[in-house]
Length: 322
Image (cartoon, rainbow, N blue to C red; front, side, top):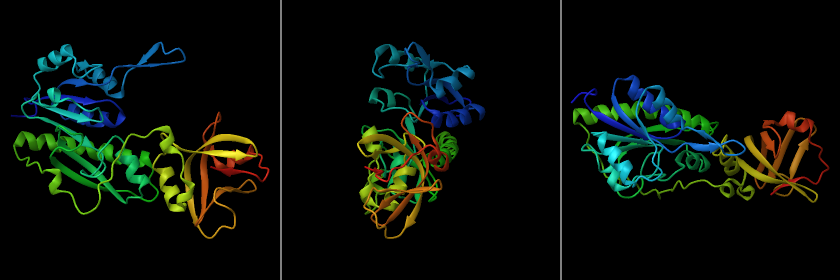
C-alpha cells in the first residue's frame, strides 16, 4: 500500500493539530475526511459561529469535514464508516469511544505531547513545566480503552529550557509532532511498527498526571518559594495565565502574571509582600528570595511590561499578594 492508497481520517481541533494535518496533505497522503468539534458561538450575543483551526484548514483544502456533537451518534457513525478509512489519526481532539477508534483495519493512533506513560491527561505541556521538568517529548500510540494508555509506537524526547514557557514548548512539540505523525504513518505503511506496552516503558519514577486546568488551578502558590512559583508562571503563560489577588488596604484586584525572574536571597519582608523599587521593578517576597515580576496584567487593563505598569500603579506601602 502506498501513501496515496492509504485512506486516512484525521481528528483534531486546535492550532496544535493543524501542523500535522498540513504535513500530511502537503506530503501527498490521502486524507479522506476530517473530524473536529462543532463551531463555537462567539460575540457579545453568541450569535456568530467560529470554526476550529483544523476545520478552517480542511475546508481550504477541500477535505470533507464532520462535526458531531456526540461521537456515538448513529448518523455520524454511518458517515464515518462511509469514508472507509484504513487508518485514523488523532491530534488534540477528545476521548473516542471504542466504536470509533476500533473502526479502521489499521487502527487509530494518537499524538500525545509528553513521553508516555508520564503525563497522561489533557494538559501535559503545562504540567511538565509547572513541575520544573527539564525534558518532555512527543509520543505516538495506538488508542485503547483507557485514555492515554495504549501501546506506544514511537517517542521523541525534547528539552525544556529554563526560560521556556508553554507557548515555546507548544511550538516545539507541534512541529516535531508533525514530523513524528508522518514518520509513524510511513512505518505503518511499511509494516515495521512494533508497539510497546506502556508497562514496559514505566520506570521507578512515580507517574505524574496532567489533568485539565481550571481557573482555580492557576492561582499562584506563593508559599512554595521562588523556583516553584517561577515554574508555575511559565507553565501557564501565555494561556490561561497564572494569577493572584493584589491587596491594597481593603481593595482586592486580580493580577495576572505572565513572566518573572528569580532572585534567591533571604528577604526581610513577610511572604507575599509586594516590594516596589520606584518605577524600575516590582518583586514578591518569598521564603527563599524574590520573584521579580516582568510582565503583568491588572483586571480590566492590558497585558504590559512592569515598567509600563508602574507608571500607572500608585503604591501606598500596604500592597501584598495572596
